[in-house]
Amino acid sequence: MNLFKALGNELDYKEILQLDGAFSIAHINYGKSPIFNGTVGKNIAKLSRKNSASSKDRIEDVLGLLVSFNGTEKNYKKADKIQLWEAYWLEYINAFDKMTEILPDSVVTAYVGRHTIEVGLKYLLAKNNEEIPYVHILKDLVNKVSFECNDNYMDDVPCFCELFDHFIEGDNVEYFRFPEYKGNNYFAGNSLDIRWLSYNIALVILKLLHYTNLEDRFSKK
Image (cartoon, rainbow, N blue to C red; front, side, top):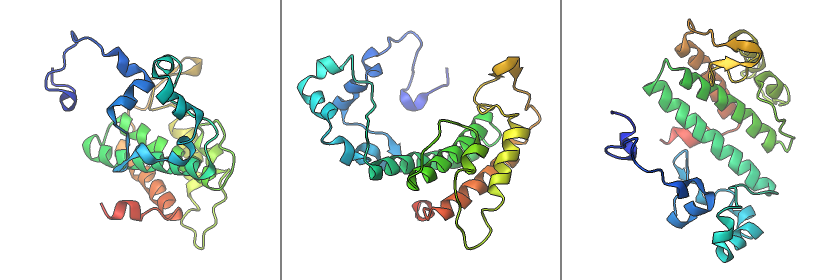
């Protein structure tokens, strides 16, 4: 089967699952780390983690944590929280950029692009020290951000988000993620032009990048 070759030459369904890989604490032994827009994530938000009790416990009681540590931390410092949101956003932009090249007509590309906007808006809220609501509706998020611009390049962003929410997704926030939604509704976007959607999604992302002064994180690549 010609799948997942990057993870091994000949992966086979008969192979035994490596169950230790499902424990967050077990991964620490290998010194690996997620990559965020080309940057190794090991030191992201390190200030909040280096003196935490859970970090100390990992060294003293690894076996106990094997079944208790769930991979999350609480009470991040503000600077680390913003850094983490920024890292996630930049990596989603990076992924969306690559997917527009590799899978330009895929619903998965549309989902990643749409989610990139959501993460970007939540990053802005975190950066402005505002509460991040537990919602996924783009209109609700963009309306919470107070854009302060010297020109009008952001003016159409709230309008696009609202129209996209209602007339593309039908107010189903996981429209491209799942084929079925609440109320016995199903995906019906079989005539959508994904490249056209991606074009507009990309413009929103570029506007947000410019607004946050993070364009240079991609211009050097």
